[in-house]
Image 1 (spheres, rainbow over the protein chains, first blue to last red):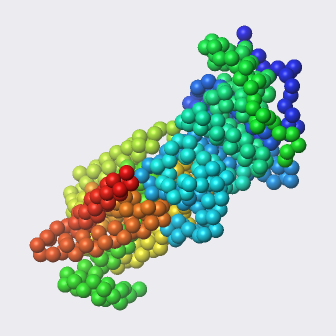
Image 2: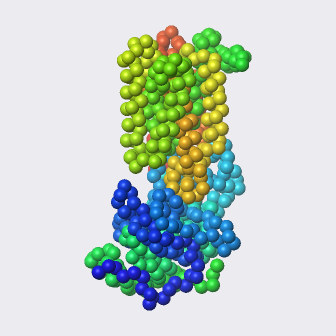
Image 3: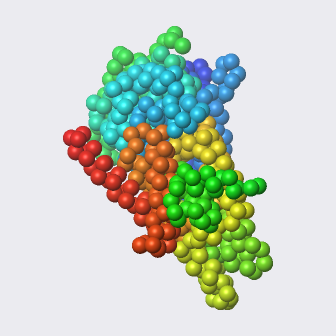
Length: 273
Length: 287
């Protein structure tokens, strides 16, 4: 039996408007299909999570959205209400860099805003802006630390700061909880939740951690090369859907319980910008 | 253009006996242009892990010389132009092909090397150029070549001013850079093209066997000394320039009488050893 598509009886999400939409998106590498006719949407102002097993094409879906892989079909990034194209911020899963590179977290952020080269010195107002951003992601003490000396969670927050630097309307994150312990992942998600409320961006993240998704997301796309289901966490993360996508062992996880254990701070906001 | 006042100035600033000969002054000027360029580009060669790329370009120099012989054009033209073409071709293949970077470079490397060697085997007259290609020949640099170097120097430094932050961005994660509106392709092609030209001129100075050393030894030592991304650039320039001057002076001493290129690289290596000591001490201090 094919996995059930999004349940029409489930409460539709409360977001009237989409920030981005995938329409029949297909990606193949050398004849092997990675994504096949994916149709899904990302509601504006919410937190959309893409979940699915390894090899489901989650990261590829993000890359299609970001224009980094060739694809068939349509990806639409909707203009903002005032008609301008949205700015996008991207937080990668990891950085591949030489850990001995003498680049401090502060300089790393100045690199993104300052036009004159770093070897010509860093201007005070760029440094102040960098410090402000680090404070916003609770990483202020890291300003003078080398990037290579940061832990996974610290680096994640600095990368988040770099993405926030552009004042994004759409923030895209690849596995924000990977390489971070459970507690760290939870704190990171709480931080994201708060920033999203303050700054009013739309969030789109890939995650393999169903617990995080259930707590944090307002909209879920269940992906396994196709979009298997889409909707609110409660409607999508049902035992039959999870069984169909992840296999039998998921029966051990009380996914239903997870889906209903959203914390108060993570409720979809109402009336907020 | 008359460069004589410049030579006189150099001779006065560095009043060594060996620097009174005009060809030594020309060599010094050549090294003072090549070394900082190589060092500045070397910072990004390390960040992008492009050592093998630079090596392949260097080895294409010989095929460039051979092309000049075939078409009866001066190798001073065919060598840099061929290097430029090879550099851009590798970058194009790397961006378009699904093969891994080192495979692409390895294939191109083999092709240009085979072509160069095939030409040598046909024409024994190229043997002298083979020597020059292997060990470098900064002492015979001519004035038009120096002017060409000067122009390239200006281009590289302008590029470093425009692109240093952007290249750092791209080197850390090209996808993030591209999403955040850094012109990634422009950065990569400009970098590959300029690096190819710098490598070709460096082959002149130190020979193909040591060209990567000229690029990465100062940058590697600078990485150990520097405490910020900005100062890494200046350390690299300082190390390469002092190594170049010291290498030229030492190589001309009666007790040394060594080839200039290898001597320059050895001086750079002394800097590198010192930087390792500093890095180790710092790590101990941090503990």
